Length: 392
Image (cartoon, rainbow, N blue to C red; front, side, top):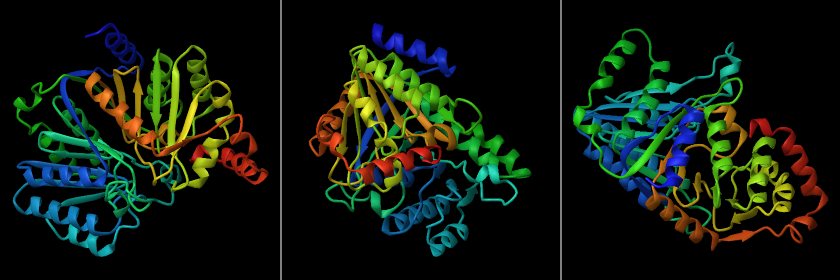
């Protein structure tokens, strides 16, 4: 282990109190044309268990294909559990929901809105987790037609998703189980806990060279672990920090840390959506802090081809942060997220090359020209959006 990786590992373990596991292998997939076949093949190949948690499960051909594959797995005797966020999955076709409910698939809603539990309505699961025996998937993909294709046009979103093998799979399985137990009751709780150790010990074996820290972030009072993680990687960067995010709404503390990093010589770059964003208010709230970042030399680019939905941070060519969390208030304070901090030079170099490719389809904001000339309507929109940034 190099001095860089040891420094980052030790600092993040001390800050977050979650140890890294060694011996993992991470495989990255770009866009729906790569992501969905890999996930569906993993479900088809499962012999014991499939656990699936997601915020977005909507409609369309890919939603039907996932349902077909999950039902087929359950029919051949695989334990299949599906946990859908009760708000995020509202657009799901009723006929599709009925098919899953009438099959051998166990399906639950995460935190269905309850009138007297108003404090829960805004706290959702934004985690994306698929466990199929000894492989786990996580990243940003949702089960909807927007994610199909290869980011060739505005109808095909740009996404990155990951397959994880090795000891970290059990930690991702624990993240699923944590939420599953919240939504079952009585004998089902005991049954789920008794089944928790059903994977044979051999699947804990080391299969690669990546060290992985799995962070299960939950909404709460004060700083979440996700808050500490993002602040930690920004503060620890020495040479280069690259942030790719679908929703860029940093709080004042993160803005100050990004400016400080640039001031001490770190190359700080941010890539987020451009004209095809699916959440203009969120975009406006982030744009309200562009001027501060630009003044300190932070480079900001906006992806032009389609909606950019990836969530990736790379640090100094050796560390990557992947998973479901965005660089915004909602991911840091409102939603339950899953984040993987990966110490693997090969993966980080691959993600940096992806970043370089994405930059070819992005426009950079010129702080001296373009941004200074934006009109009063946009400035008012930024001010308004920033006032409600805690919800974005």
